[in-house]
Length: 396
Ligand SMILES: C[S@@+](CC[C@H](N)C(=O)[O-])C[C@H]1O[C@@H](n2cnc3c(N)ncnc32)[C@H](O)[C@@H]1O
Ligand code: SF4
Image 1: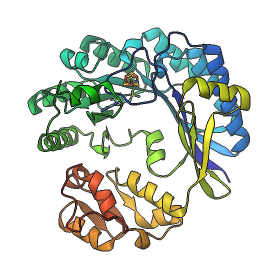
Image 2: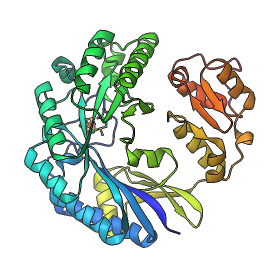
Image 3: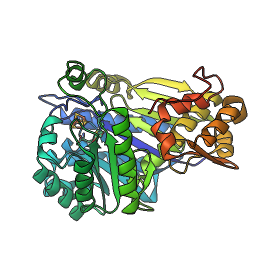
Image 4: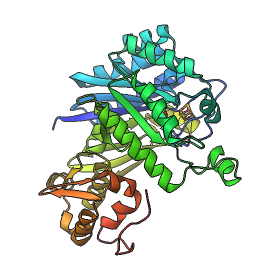
């Protein structure tokens, strides 16, 4: 069967490690560029043999900092994808870029290699906060990078991190309005999270900074939704905002249960083989991944069949992150599981009454109030959840 498929390529290296980041990203003094290029090409050949009849609809170079990749490596990967598979006419090929590694010449070379969209890690338009976040770029560098990206690529997006220590709602409003002067198409807006195993986790535990409380964090989220909606870029997912038609097609494939091949250290994939959906994961350590590909042709450590229940729950969790919500009958068809056996109808009714969820015949979606409680609300709606019957009162 010919199935539309996305490809994720993980580049695990960064020039420096940001203290808040728990992505699989590493700093290395020296990278053997040829070996890495050859490894990605070998892993692509492996998947081409395994999944020959595919049409590739999107490719995403994520990281780490893929804008540090030599454009020749990106070119070789894109060429190899085109050699192995058919691609859609409107294929989306995105590369994540850090403002410190953006030069016009390099962007032109990426464009030449086939990249047609970039996603820039801007994080803040405030110099003090960029420093706090451990970023190596200034606001001026950020704005130059945004302008360069907009000049070179038809589609560009950027990421900002908000709800930062000491940030006020007014500061954020001004910063976001400024950001919106630079894009009318797509923005990813993340609330700062203190992740385990990061330097921020230690600093936070030692009281070196404090995070906004739950109520203020909720106000940040609500204000963000108001501004973005009024500027014509409503959220289509919890943290992603776009003008109509500008949504990330690659991410939408993840969130709507599409197949995707994941290649590179720590990359995850979801692939269908003979009607069974499998979860894949590559070895996370860069050097071990490289060695495995060199010896066996692929870096995968896991190929696990997903049960109908697994597929349903995964689709339920990712689908409820989307503004449009989920179609329960479509999710049933896709997963092969019976929704009534997995979801608690009484709790869905409570969530509706409380204004956390909306249900029309077949569709279930979370409201802004529901998204604010999402981490507690999703398990609450499941039949075998043991949370309080009164409902999730903890904010997400
Ligand atoms: C892989 S990074 C993006 C590209 C590039 N590495 C960079 O930082 O410029 C993905 C995005 O996740 C977001 N992010 C990472 N850690 C985060 C955290 N602890 N809290 C909130 N957002 C975070 C940042 O906005 C970041 O741009
Ligand atoms: S935020 Fe981006 S640049 Fe910073 S360590 Fe993470 S992946 Fe690397």
